[in-house]
Amino acid sequence: MEYPERITALRVFNKSPVIAVNGLTARYGDHTILDGVSFQVLKGEIFAIMGGSGCGKSTLLKHMIGLYTPVKGTVMIHGVDIAGADEATLKQVRREMGVLFQSSGLLGSMNLAENVALPLLEHTDLSAATIERIVSMKLGMVNLSGYGHYLPSELSGGMKKRAGLARAMALDPTILFFDEPWAGLDPITSAELNNIIKGINAGIGTTMVIVTHKVESIVYLADQAIMLDRDERGIIAQGDPRDLKEHSPDPRVSTFLTSDTAELNKEDT
Image: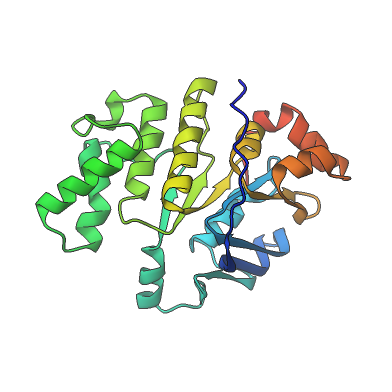
């Protein structure tokens, strides 16, 4: 499915990085997955982490959100080394981060409104009326107005992803992380999610980091991308994905960005 031509405009990003990954090395036991990976994500960017199966995309994401600790190197979020931060500082940094997991992560025993309200109830002292208004607004942002009383089991896969995104945005994070957001979605539903992601980024300037092998969406959405390679255990390309697709001298990069094989990868390390 083809999307409308991406609107091109001069986008001025804050020159200070929101995220800085420096010399990150990740291992499982004696097996090194990533070795000395470094890159920056600027404020307001849609930044994609792409690559084939087993290249370490999900491993890198888990280090960036603080679930894993690097063997070497640092992950700086808003200038804070999240691996070395104390619990109070880490809690503050995590409030600036929202995560949409591949499975959407909704609690099946709660309806959508309750799922979206959960971070607000746990991390704020807002009144019930204020939380209700915020929940309604977040559901509206993902085209789910009127679905607050539905249980996750009553929704399609695409609606669950959008509800998970509404919950990820509940605390107004400055950074949103996406783990394979299009997994299991048909082309029409994927296009709808693309437009929502793009609209949020354009409307409120949220910095976004997307881990995916879905080439079509990378090229449509991302301002910058890195490509990881399993054999190299690191980055083999970085830049605007449209430029990489057309001009990369590395056949691994051009093949990935112009073939359907990237769509077939289903699992990552």
